[in-house]
Image (cartoon, rainbow, N blue to C red):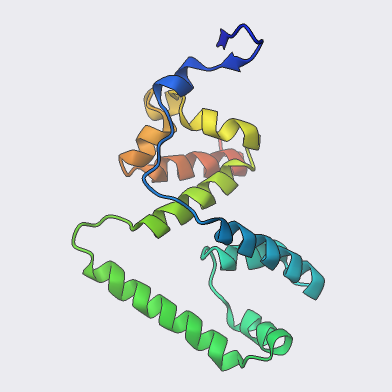
Length: 168
């Protein structure tokens, strides 16, 4: 750590490995998530489940389709078809990708999901710093380097082991 004259601390590692993503998340996505969480609480639904659906992390199940039909006045069939068509189209898109790379929206969603998972084991204010520090668990690479290499599964495995209490 470097102590500046105005008593602020700045980590040299953060300077060395700046976070400079090539993607952006529109603020409306965060707004939609917040509105969905408030709505879910008001309607007696699980806010985390609804937010995960809004963010594309979980599907609309047939049980939720029934609840949505009652609450929103849109048929159960509509919600089930919407989910089925989404999964079908997503599968088709993935099958047709020749470069094997994720698109920006998918990448942004995965980073958001990763941040949410990390927030269960690391204080939120330290996540960005943690992502930029070399880590023994990743052969002294930073977690961001692991992500850029396409090895994000190593981080998910670490999160699973920490949350499950598995011996390392």
